[in-house]
Each structure stands twice: as C-alpha cells, then as structure tokens.
Length: 218
Image (cartoon, rainbow, N blue to C red):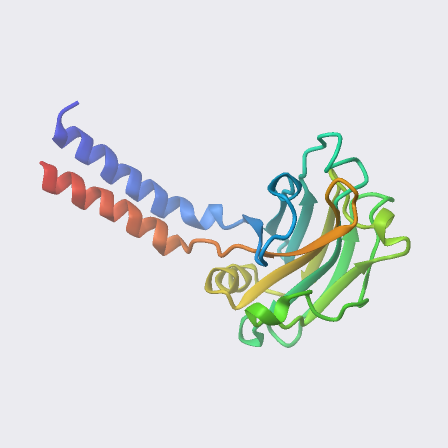
C-alpha cells in the first residue's frame, strides 16, 4: 500500500472514530487502582481486579460494579477478597440537585444499604477524597459484599449520563472502594479509586497526531 492510500485510510479511520463517539457514549468502563503504599506482598494485590460499567439508563446513570478477581486457591477464593464500602466523591456542579439515588442488586447474595461506617474512604484524606454518598453491605458484610464473580448495581436517577462521564474524565466525580479480606489469611484491607477515563477529544487528538506523522513522513 502506498503512502497516499495509507493516508486516506487513516483519515477515514479518524472520521469513523469521530462519528462513532455518540454511540460509544452509551456505556463506559472504569478500572480501579490501589492508591496507598502497599504493605502486602505483590501476589496478594496483583490478583485483585475490580471494575465498573457506567451506562445510560435514559432516566439516569447506572453503575454496575464487578469483582473480577480470579480465584487462585490461596489469596483469592470464592468468598474473598470482598468489596465492602463503595463511595462517591461528587462535585455538585456535575450532578443536579434534583438527583436521587437507588441501589439495585444482581443476586440474593449481594445486599447493600445506604450509609455505614467508616463515613469516608479509608485513606481518602491523602487524596482529598470526601464522600458524598456511601453504601455498605448488610450484615454479615463478608457475605453480603461483592465477592469474586459477583456484581452489584447502583442507579443515579435523574442524573445526566454525559455529565457523569465528563465529571469522571475531569476528576470531579471519583469512586472509591474499601476492599477487605485481602491476602492469604484474609485479614488485610486496602482502598481503591477509579482511574481517570480519557475524554473523546483526547482520542481524536491522538488520531490527528498519527495523521500529522504520516504526512511528514510522506
């Protein structure tokens, strides 16, 4: 393929990315990362995999959290680690004051209620995290929280999906999780927060950068 044809192909790809953005905004994936210095061995932490899917409900925005940690027979089992408290730190400019917040459950083994303790994400002060919403498992927490393979959903009713995605990208909406029963003896816990998501404009700028590079090479 000559450079002119390649240029046209990349240009068409850039146009396709741009036109596909509105449809892609129907849902967005979030990953969570440990933010405090680890005092556990790497094997205990590297197997923890928590993510979320943010989707547009039409009537609001849904967060579906899944404990994806893979069972390995020692540090991860069918009952641990468990996601207990889930926190939202929300800049009010991104979420209207008319919001309401309902929680939904994916199975009878997952059961959360509003409130609980601690009132803020453990270690959250280190990253200026101040919880506006929090949910905790009903008792016993180790059984009603999110164990490996389980999912729980939480709905912001009346909250615009595009505003939420903009807030997540800007860091004005952050989600924190307190994960317990970590390690081979299941006695440790760690805080996690969602990683910022790239804005659509950043993806398009990347495509433009590729186009410029190809043009210079030609």
